[in-house]
Image (cartoon, rainbow, N blue to C red):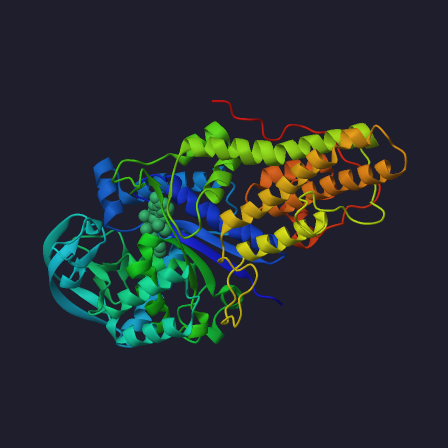
Length: 549
Ligand code: MSP
């Protein structure tokens, strides 16, 4: 049986409410998950919340409520967000759950018994934001700790350490041997440079006297672990990892079926959290190199060039946007107006612009004009064209209309997929980069543009005036091609705007027996010429009314 496709997002801190940057990450993972379901794969999509740690403890204290109560309330907002944005995850991670704590303790106990965790005393500068001691390596060229570390204070305390530095050579070798460990590849280069600088081991505990909102160490009740072993481990604990089995071949069948995952994270948590600590933790607990997760690293949504974040105070509320424009308008904007891996500036005007130009004009008009014409000229019934397929409306192209669309479908698939896991000895025609949802959307828009140009060039209203011979054949061919184009658009756009895709299918009368169900769409159906002769379409209903400002 084919393995399940496993995809995760980072887990979100429950010290504050979600903003558009977080919404983006959830939706990106959801779109990739939906694309894999569209391919007919079994998908396991995990997202959730990071509930422990100093920041949460501090925020709860500020709010005057116990951390558990505080966390419950904030967690609800993250759950609400996933629901609001039609994010269809299969599992929800909460790090305060017993299921998770059990795995964390099991892993820590095993590493402690193997001598990979030891106790030591440390004195030095401590970053409250990153919850870690800093060394001189973290100082900038001016000798100061950069703003990314937040408030710095001097501390002295005993703690437990994980033997991280002994794995530096392994990590370098691993990254050398696997070109797509980190996507996009410039992030892999960035990580390799950071790994070269690894020196000390990793502090993994805090004395309870200072922080008690964490998971108690199984071998010392005066300490809790937090952040690294607490949060990163969620990716395996919620996939049914059994901490008592170091050999992955003896893992639970669920885990073996799911792992390894494609993990989506923002660029700020690649180094050191995921790229260094997480990969080394997995290696240390027995994961072989071919079982390492791939990390897809996205950029940030900025406001006027600055990262959107609560501390800067420039956050955009995704709930308000979804209420104002609809969840799908927001999903569409977040997926189409940023290049996966790069940063983008958030702009509400751009959201409206893209909605009007792409959804209302390109897709909406094509739907409306096509169904109106099929209704008027063919009594809602399309006929399978006889003879040759239509020529491309773009006279410079030698491809036929259908060939052009087939080319766009191929490019779409390539943009939505991962790069091959083997070195490519030649340049493939469409490998612009993996998981570039914006480029895949560009292909769907390209298909809609072809349709709209065809309407203009073929002018069905003229053909309809003379329904004898050639004109009739041509009118049939044009209206069949347009309806088929809409059917394909709905399938391909369904991971991004699932409700709108259903709306198109409802009007085109596509797979009515699966109305409202995700199974209605299948990538295998995105093949030219599937609509049968005599197919009856429905009435046009405006799907994307223009947003007037
Ligand atoms: N809890 C940690 C991650 C632990 S993962 C085991 C954390 N949480 S977070 O809530 O601060 O961020 C969660 C994710 O949201 C990260 O991947 C981060 O990059 C992403 N984003 C936060 N702000 C963002 C933008 N402005 N734009 C895009 N993504 C952003 O880090």
